[in-house]
Length: 170
Image (tube, rainbow, N blue to C red; front, side, top):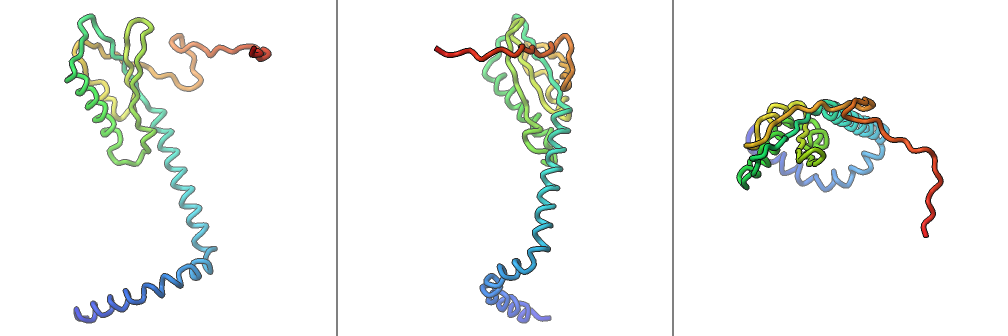
């Protein structure tokens, strides 16, 4: 097979593309019983795998409390370093890009119950990055994340109100 033959066959194929495109809808409609179930099953499989990956990632989250000392006064450089730290933790968790983003999200919570505390949560695969000392003047403590349905002294049982009639607005 010479180069001229290959080029001539490519030119003939390109010239036939409009005819092929015109015949494609009729061809696909004649064989819809073959490709439609395959598309539906493929889509269901992709959605199912993504759901399993997200559930697995959300079950294995870790959290750390950053407790400031009296000398805590972060500079703008430390704030940028912390933001870079969180971005690096996100990248380390999603190395192969298989788990969807919502399963790998980093969460930062600020609370002021017993003084100012900041909780950093993320997937377990990025625990080493989250555990690393990020601020000078902060103590890092591990937090046990409660599982659904667990009631411990740290997570009180939900308050249940008796059935009361709705309040009428004036």
